Structures are given as C-alpha cells and as structure tokens.
Length: 512
Ligand code: GLA
Image (cartoon, rainbow, N blue to C red):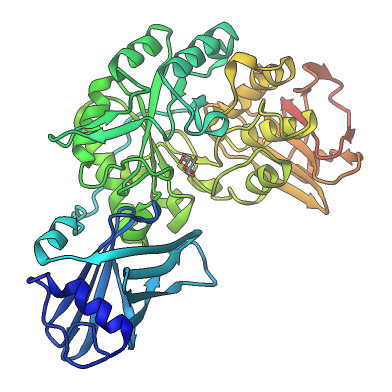
C-alpha cells in the first residue's frame, strides 16, 4: 500500500461522519456519493480559504472552496490523479489568467491546498471534518435586491471637497489623528477655502457584536463623539465600507449587514460614505450585480433619512458614470488607485477620466484623492495635479497630513480661483480641446459665460505654447487671469512658457 494512502486512511479513520472512502490500495478520495470536507484552521489571510468540499457523483467530481474574502468559490474542471485533485478557480484582476489551477493533495500531514487568487498565493494544510463542522464554516449567501432607481436629493451640487485618511495614513489612523486633521483643516484656513469633509477611510472597523452591529476597533473608542467633535468645527464626517465580506485592507465589510450598517453610520452622525467594492468583486463580477449591490446601499442610506454623500468606489467598472446617479451615488471613482508620482497621477488625470457628459450637479466623476503635499511630485507636477482636477470638476479630497502642509501645498490647495473653477455651479467637466504631441490645451465652460483654459506640457522640457482663441471656440477674450501667478494679465497674451510637466492655468472672462 502506498504510504500516503495508509497515512490518509489513518487520518480519517476516526471521523465517523466522513463518507465511505473507496476501497483499494491507492484510493483515498471519496467514492461515488461521498464528500470530503476539509477545514483550514491555519490559513493564508487572503483569500482565507477555510473550507474545501469535494463530492464524487455519478457524473464526476464537484467541489468548492469557502473563503473569508470571497465566499463560495466553485471548482471547475476537476481532475483526480492518485492522491491529488486539481481544479480551476476563477481568478480576478488578472486578464491574462482568468482562472488559476489549484491542487489539493492528500498527505500524512493533512490535505495540502495550493493555488492563488490575484496577488495572493495559497499553500496551507487542513484536516478532514464532519458535515456539521463544515456547515458551520460554509458561506451564507445573501441575495441582492432587485435594481431600483433613487431620485436626486440635491446633495453635492458642486464636487465634494475635504480630506481623506488613506493616501497618507493608510491603516495607521485613530481617533486622535482624525481630530487633529479636523483642527488643522480649520487652523490652516482650508475649511474656509471650501474643504468640509473629514473622511475616515479603511482601517476603523472592529468586529461585529452578537447583534450583528459593526463596532469600531479600539483606536476609535466612540464614533458618535468623534462625529460631534468634527461637526462642532463646522465640518462633516465621512466613513468607509465595502459591499464585500472584507474591505480592501481586510476589515469587516457590510456584506449581509447593509441596512444595519447604514443605520449605524447615520446614528453616529456620519455625513459621507465611501463604499469600496474590494472583496465584493468576487460575488459582483458583472454589471447587473455591481449595480444592484451599489443600489442596495444607496437605498439603505436613503432609508435612514440622514443626508449622506454616497461615494461609489468600484474603479470605473461597467461604465459606472452612466448609472452612478440612479443608485444614489454623488460621485464615483473612474479609475484604480492614484499614487504619489507624476506617471500615475497624469495617466489618471489626462487619460482615465473621460466620461464627461455624466458629470454635473449632483454626480461627479472621481479620479481619486489628491496627493498634493505628500512629497512625491515637484511643485510643477502638483500644480498640474490641482489644475487637472479643477478642470475636471473632480471632487477635491486632500490626502496629506494637514498638520504639516507646506506653504507651497497650501498655496495650491487653497487657491480661490482654482477652487472656483472646480466648484463652478454649471458643473461642466473640462476636457482637451487640442492635443499636439505632449502638449494639451484643455477648456471648461463656466457659468459666467467665461472659460477656464489650461495649457499642459506633458513633456520633460519647457515649451512655449500658443493660445489661439478661435481654435478653442472663443471669438474674443475680454479679460484674462493667470491663476497660479494670481494676477490679471494682458487679455491679448497668446504665448506662454510652460515648464516640464507643468501648467499655465487661465480664466478668460467676457469670452464668447
Ligand atoms: C482601495 C481604494 C482606495 C482605499 C483602499 C483602502 O484600494 O481604491 O482608495 O480606499 O482601498 O483599503
């Protein structure tokens, strides 16, 4: 007898609830009608496979994994070879590998599972368990409601402005830091420049109580008190969750508790929710389910009766700009995550945020939070960042440590002309009017009949750029303001020196 077979037979010998194993020297997997169930008490945290179930039917093998992150993961194309089965598991975010081949090998030490999802590799060993234990470990599927439509509520008439914890602090956040950010937003003058939301991103969540209620972790002793503190400073509080089982950083998501979480947030006094698809991308992998899962939270927020800005974060999938409003969204991310470097910022700002027609009062394309003040770009590059976001009528969510804002960053972030263009009540998303090699001229129609004009030099050498009014739909320019130099200039100026990766940002008045 093969030594693995002996060992495996010993391993399962005491488990009366295990199905009969096929007889024979080398057969250790279940016979027809039988199921092998394996629990993984020790598991890779992501995707956290806690249970393997494998059944032999007349038609062949069937099976599934149960994951802390993704719930039920069905096996496909199961092939048995001796004491090993291999099978396909759907992969995500990896277009060149839409499935991964996994194996479960029966060894004297237990069942060794290997495989992977996205960037997580799995190699873990589990033990066979009975049906009752497996049932306790199984994922409880919660069906989505049918899709409905949420009427506009008048919130976010202009793009939301504020600060979010993620870009600078990631999970290193606590009550004290959030309070300090609220204080700094006031003392720096940024509140009075228009920034209002103080948003706690991922990392505040603790465990759910027996009542299902999601509690903050120990770093946030009292969310209601924190909201009161923020409100007392004329500011608003934002929070973060996911429709999935886990948030992107692995904290509890709202899966199965959507309405309850919405009520909890409202009770705490939350004014803004960023709802990040994260692990929910497994269950919600098509347009219909993504839309319904965002509708579910949109409806739940509405049902609380509290005005709450609803920020959809599903990275621009399934043309979210075209339906974001109808599920209650006030802004929707159009891309993956920004990073504090010119390459990523400019790729997002210039190329990945193009659903212009859908932006406007009540609903905004969100190219992600600002990196200004975090130090990864030059002053010219940060000026381009702020200009692109203002021209795009993008939400302006600062992402640096507000306590240590440099004078240069403060000047950019609090420039009233730039903010006025971002916040222009007409809510037009600007776009490129002329693209010539690495040079782009963007325009944005303003509510006063004027036009914001940005001359962008994406190249690595300074250039001279020419403004030709007739090429951007203007017959005359009555007045011209250079926004970053904070001065009115000669309206007949047509030639501008634009630094490498830099921008000249203009507001034309009396233009037609
Ligand atoms: C995703 C989002 C980010 C941030 C992190 C938090 O990556 O896109 O903006 O919220 O999750 O884990």
